[in-house]
Length: 148
Image (cartoon, rainbow, N blue to C red; front, top):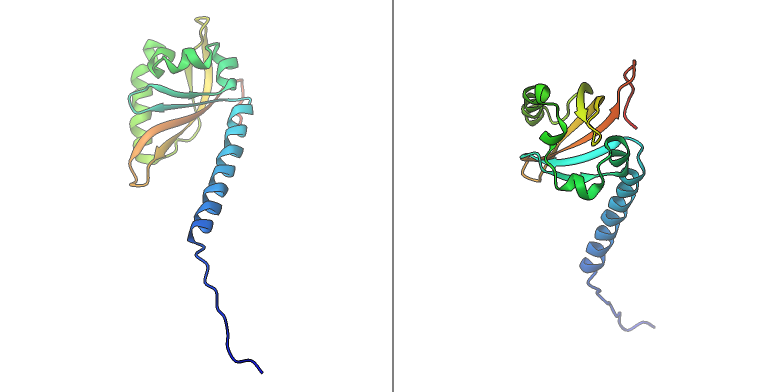
């Protein structure tokens, strides 16, 4: 004959939060590997043009090391005659969140002017405000190609 029941309550809120944090961290780690190993140049800049991220693909494509690039402004990589157009693209991006791939020119460390295709994406915070721009860039050939 059963005369009673013992019930044990365990607080699992912390465990649930820990699992969620680990899941997010694993996702970020996978994304970091993709960015690190991508063949295309992947960069990030703030709204003032300061370069905040520069992957190995960008170093190969443009010739500046990550340390050199992080001390630069994106304007340093735009030929003077293209700067007005580039600022217009940033304004468009703040309204559209993602720009269709477009062709333009960028300067390499060697001084060469490269014909490149770029996809630009607005980085938006939790309040919906644009705080930066991520780009995927590749050297344009005769035919447009999708970014890697």
